[in-house]
Length: 146
Image: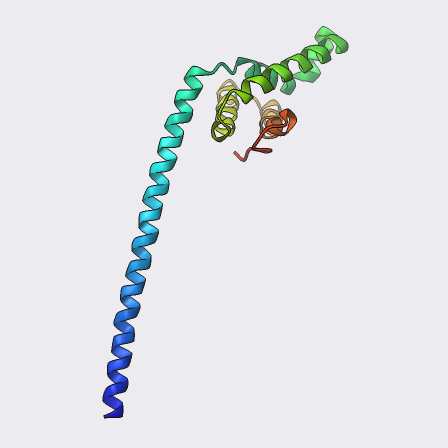
């Protein structure tokens, strides 16, 4: 009788384990689907925001800064520094008009557009500067990861 009771308990625990595992799998699958839907909605919202917001100064700033040594030789150091500071301020103002959740996606798109034009060393500098641009502007997120 004790053996039969033990077998019934073990079988019940096995069935319970399968039910719990299945419920856990269902929860994880549901969460993944909801997260994917959220990400798609967020991406669409950011895409619409890019269409509305002008971010030309940020693109200009990143391009200028990645090519800075060559430009400095051609235009004169002091004039270039002054213009770089103005562009940074204008870029920061543009980024402040963009939702926090969309800033990094927007910066990544700017760099990707420039990458299509060709880049090499300039491209690496532009990526690094774009990653740190929110921090330079004193806005969130402090750093972008792309």
